[in-house]
Image (tube, rainbow, N blue to C red; front, side, top):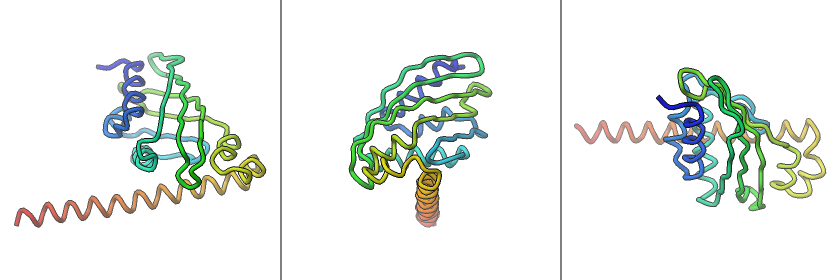
Length: 172
């Protein structure tokens, strides 16, 4: 059985290598995730979010991290993601503090905290700097992130359904 520190090492090493399958294996079946951009997500949604973000980065994502604390029940990781925001091609260095709770040797609750105003300025330019602090603008960022994730989930559900039908038909 892996220790919680090993789970965190596995998760962030897999993240830095773009291995979403290994990342997903670190989450408990009933895991939840939350952050300022996407809000609260289920395990299925967070796994899809990581897949979506890694695919959009086209391999141009750098992850650095350090484990600040790891106990029997909790963990804290400081990490940074450096990438070009896909919608504007602007360079972002997002510094994040992640808090974890563990259950049955896996990540049960994952909360990422970062400054959404600072992120919006880097990602969106002058509009983000000027308006990114407002609750209205931050809500619009969340709505757009959630909609993007919903579309990604719907598209991938369709792709998986087509693959299953093709696999079934090939056996006939």
